[in-house]
Image (tube, rainbow, N blue to C red; front, side, top):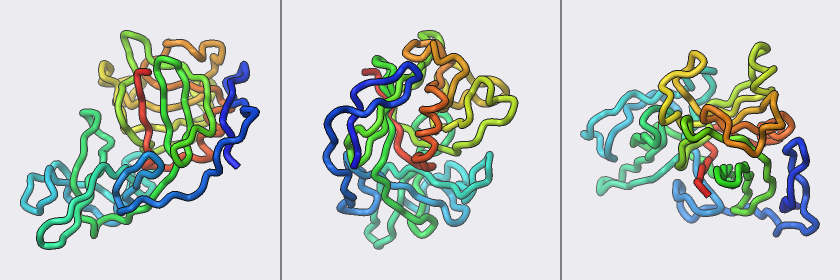
Length: 244
């Protein structure tokens, strides 16, 4: 049974509440691809396909969407942001792309993807500096976080887990054991540490800074917390970053 969280330990780990949350029963969306407060959808790209600006084979192509990720070469799972069925009966799926500008999308023919529903999502609250894990719309875990500064803010919006990876031996001392990359990019840094300014949820070597606005835009949590998140996150999982 899922439990609500009453608070946080000094390390940022979730502390169970005294009352249990409602049972996390499986919830099915009424229509494939339709997002609800309980369910979102992931599209696994099965074969390379032209991403288009509109659900029409004649619409302008924005690029080729591959069936594997650019970094780890794992299957490419993308968050679904819409669906459309044309008058000819052809179905299309709109997906969010891991590219600038933030929120970039493309339409793919449904024949090029495989859809699956997911009943978990992550919510990052910048004002309270917390990361929440929700299941069927209910908060089941909450973690203390450090977020971007005023000069290097964490972007606000709806994103997705992109291509989560184990940190390398050289990164582990300051990024923790896992790096949960998102489809979000820094609004001010075009490059950072040799990368394109990609935003991620990761661990930290300075847990005493959790609860503060001290990062270059990434969301830092304790190493224990990022390990817990790693055990449940999936590429394509919905991640909401809010100001409140």
